[in-house]
Length: 463
Ligand code: PFF
Image 1 (cartoon, protein in one colour):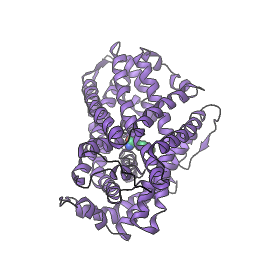
Image 2 (tube, helix red, strand yellow):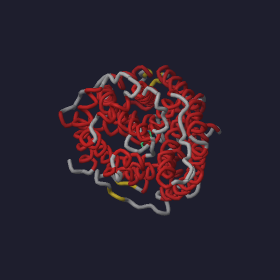
Image 3 (tube, protein in one colour):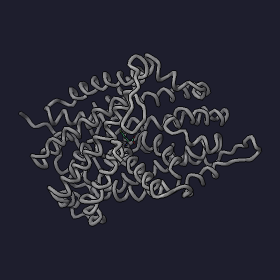
């Protein structure tokens, strides 16, 4: 059989923007701000940054290096590294397969809000019950899921440099400009509350940045560290096959150390700026209570904040949801790519066939996710005590169980069986300086697997 030529990024910038595009997603914009608000603002930020440059860097480096070294998909890369570890590839490809449907369902929700604000219906979106009645609808969530998935599939269909690289080079700079613009705007807003006090965005910024140690004992500190760790995992797109797939398209001459630093910086900067965008605005219009709304922050609280801004709110809301949509598309397509590349490398399918098969499967499972809020509604109590539907179950199984498990196994494989040299040699193959080499070895062998075991035990409700 003729060997098909493997896709490749044309340059390091394309790779960095694509990988940052994957990392920067709903996790940064929707999840990070509410965790930061809940977990003592600045304290969470400091812990998060420390973990990003130690733990996050270790996992990211490991996966990108595995990808580039093997030039294989998540499904087939582990087998190439070591025959006995081939089964890990199944995890690395099943995880994105499970995530794609619900990520695209949420991407569809973002699209719906974008359309609502764009067409001047922002005020409707601020009404109580709007979000609930939308997601429990029988047809609309499915239609938006389909549209979102279609956008991601078309990009993947066009290939690595013509689809992923090209779209990332357009979307990511726009995203950055919008994030910075909204963050600056958020700091300038002011409002007078019922008690006649004027509250400004800067006051909200202080709540976000100044560490709050009130009531923080050892136990609370430990849980904040674990929250930050879980978030980092989610945010960097590690343990879901993506960075192996993207790493496999990086040219051998590219400087991986530099690229990884840039990806990390980009992801952390956008998460930080998302907090600057959201927390001051929510604080000004809803006070400290507005920030404890948790996951509903983006779809329920923010539309109310945009409404409170007056006529300009519709425009700010449309720009905001356009930005979230870009972030979600670049992440959604990377998840799709992790599965598509596995089908191509593992089953010898063409990219076209693999994209069609995976998109159809994702649509079917995605519709089941959407129907989880109406026809298929049930309440299932997860091991951590929260009650969830299909979406929450898929999210829980992938993020809380399979991803920590895969990462622990990958750390053991690289740290103990193949030895860290495997990764170090790959990232320094062109004579690059690997500044955090000692740290990398300590992390991959001891610290990262140990922290991950704690995370897994918390997720399973054991501790
Ligand atoms: N890292 C991306 C984000 O922060 O949204 C993508 C992603 C995260 C996808 C978590 C899936 C997931 F479960």
